[in-house]
Image (tube, rainbow, N blue to C red; front, side, top):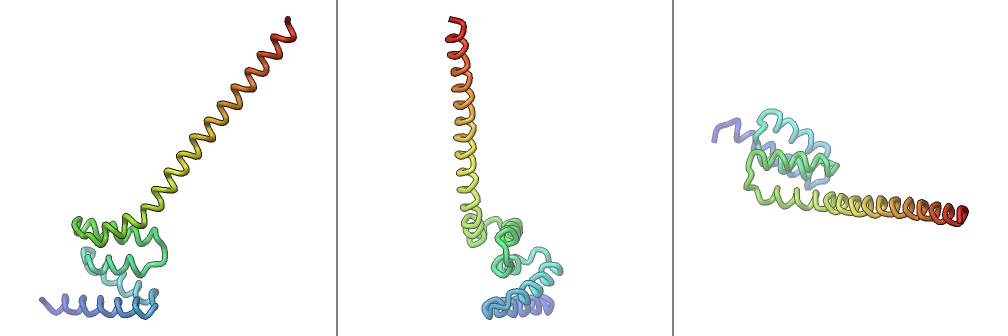
Length: 124
Protein backbone atom coordinates (compact mmCIF):
# COMPACT_ATOMS: atom_id res chain seq x y z
CA UNK A 1 0.00 0.00 0.00
CA UNK A 2 1.38 3.42 -0.85
CA UNK A 3 1.60 6.39 1.47
CA UNK A 4 -1.46 8.13 -0.02
CA UNK A 5 -3.58 5.03 0.55
CA UNK A 6 -2.28 4.76 4.12
CA UNK A 7 -3.24 8.38 4.73
CA UNK A 8 -6.70 7.77 3.24
CA UNK A 9 -7.25 4.79 5.53
CA UNK A 10 -6.06 6.79 8.56
CA UNK A 11 -8.47 9.59 7.69
CA UNK A 12 -11.28 7.05 7.25
CA UNK A 13 -10.53 5.63 10.69
CA UNK A 14 -10.59 9.17 12.10
CA UNK A 15 -14.01 9.71 10.52
CA UNK A 16 -15.29 6.45 11.99
CA UNK A 17 -14.13 7.56 15.44
CA UNK A 18 -15.94 10.89 14.95
CA UNK A 19 -19.14 9.03 14.05
CA UNK A 20 -18.84 6.87 17.15
CA UNK A 21 -18.31 10.01 19.23
CA UNK A 22 -21.55 11.47 17.78
CA UNK A 23 -19.60 14.21 15.97
CA UNK A 24 -21.28 13.49 12.67
CA UNK A 25 -20.88 16.92 11.07
CA UNK A 26 -17.10 16.70 11.41
CA UNK A 27 -17.16 13.12 10.13
CA UNK A 28 -19.18 14.16 7.08
CA UNK A 29 -16.65 16.88 6.25
CA UNK A 30 -13.77 14.44 6.49
CA UNK A 31 -15.59 11.76 4.50
CA UNK A 32 -16.64 14.30 1.87
CA UNK A 33 -13.02 15.31 1.37
CA UNK A 34 -12.07 11.63 1.04
CA UNK A 35 -14.67 10.89 -1.64
CA UNK A 36 -13.82 14.14 -3.44
CA UNK A 37 -10.21 13.01 -3.66
CA UNK A 38 -11.03 9.41 -4.57
CA UNK A 39 -14.60 9.01 -5.85
CA UNK A 40 -14.42 5.21 -5.82
CA UNK A 41 -13.50 4.90 -2.14
CA UNK A 42 -16.18 2.35 -1.27
CA UNK A 43 -15.68 2.33 2.50
CA UNK A 44 -15.81 6.13 2.70
CA UNK A 45 -19.16 6.15 0.87
CA UNK A 46 -20.45 3.42 3.16
CA UNK A 47 -19.50 5.32 6.31
CA UNK A 48 -20.83 8.55 4.80
CA UNK A 49 -24.23 6.83 4.55
CA UNK A 50 -24.09 6.38 8.32
CA UNK A 51 -22.88 9.91 9.06
CA UNK A 52 -25.32 11.99 6.99
CA UNK A 53 -28.48 13.34 8.56
CA UNK A 54 -31.17 12.44 6.02
CA UNK A 55 -32.35 9.19 4.53
CA UNK A 56 -32.20 10.71 1.05
CA UNK A 57 -28.50 11.47 1.44
CA UNK A 58 -27.92 8.06 2.96
CA UNK A 59 -29.62 6.44 -0.04
CA UNK A 60 -27.43 8.45 -2.38
CA UNK A 61 -24.29 7.30 -0.56
CA UNK A 62 -25.43 3.69 -0.62
CA UNK A 63 -26.16 3.98 -4.34
CA UNK A 64 -22.55 5.08 -4.78
CA UNK A 65 -21.32 2.09 -2.78
CA UNK A 66 -23.32 -0.22 -5.02
CA UNK A 67 -22.08 1.58 -8.12
CA UNK A 68 -18.52 0.84 -7.01
CA UNK A 69 -19.25 -2.68 -5.76
CA UNK A 70 -22.62 -4.17 -6.77
CA UNK A 71 -21.93 -7.15 -4.48
CA UNK A 72 -21.73 -5.12 -1.25
CA UNK A 73 -24.33 -6.92 0.86
CA UNK A 74 -24.26 -4.34 3.67
CA UNK A 75 -25.09 -1.49 1.30
CA UNK A 76 -27.78 -3.49 -0.50
CA UNK A 77 -29.45 -4.48 2.78
CA UNK A 78 -29.31 -0.94 4.19
CA UNK A 79 -30.70 0.53 0.97
CA UNK A 80 -33.51 -2.02 1.02
CA UNK A 81 -34.39 -1.09 4.62
CA UNK A 82 -34.47 2.61 3.70
CA UNK A 83 -36.52 2.13 0.56
CA UNK A 84 -38.85 -0.49 2.03
CA UNK A 85 -40.81 2.19 3.88
CA UNK A 86 -40.98 4.31 0.71
CA UNK A 87 -42.31 1.31 -1.23
CA UNK A 88 -44.97 0.65 1.42
CA UNK A 89 -46.04 4.30 1.34
CA UNK A 90 -46.21 4.19 -2.45
CA UNK A 91 -48.39 1.06 -2.34
CA UNK A 92 -50.64 2.66 0.26
CA UNK A 93 -51.00 5.85 -1.80
CA UNK A 94 -51.84 3.76 -4.86
CA UNK A 95 -54.57 1.88 -2.98
CA UNK A 96 -55.98 5.12 -1.53
CA UNK A 97 -56.02 6.72 -4.99
CA UNK A 98 -57.83 3.70 -6.42
CA UNK A 99 -60.55 3.83 -3.76
CA UNK A 100 -60.82 7.62 -4.06
CA UNK A 101 -61.33 7.35 -7.81
CA UNK A 102 -63.76 4.47 -7.39
CA UNK A 103 -65.82 6.49 -4.90
CA UNK A 104 -65.92 9.47 -7.28
CA UNK A 105 -67.16 7.31 -10.13
CA UNK A 106 -69.75 5.70 -7.84
CA UNK A 107 -70.93 9.11 -6.66
CA UNK A 108 -71.38 10.37 -10.23
CA UNK A 109 -73.21 7.19 -11.23
CA UNK A 110 -75.57 7.68 -8.28
CA UNK A 111 -76.13 11.33 -9.26
CA UNK A 112 -76.87 10.33 -12.86
CA UNK A 113 -79.20 7.53 -11.72
CA UNK A 114 -81.03 9.95 -9.43
CA UNK A 115 -81.41 12.48 -12.24
CA UNK A 116 -82.70 9.75 -14.54
CA UNK A 117 -85.27 8.62 -11.96
CA UNK A 118 -86.37 12.21 -11.38
CA UNK A 119 -86.78 12.78 -15.12
CA UNK A 120 -88.82 9.57 -15.44
CA UNK A 121 -91.04 10.63 -12.52
CA UNK A 122 -91.53 14.11 -13.99
CA UNK A 123 -92.45 12.96 -17.50
CA UNK A 124 -94.64 10.01 -16.49
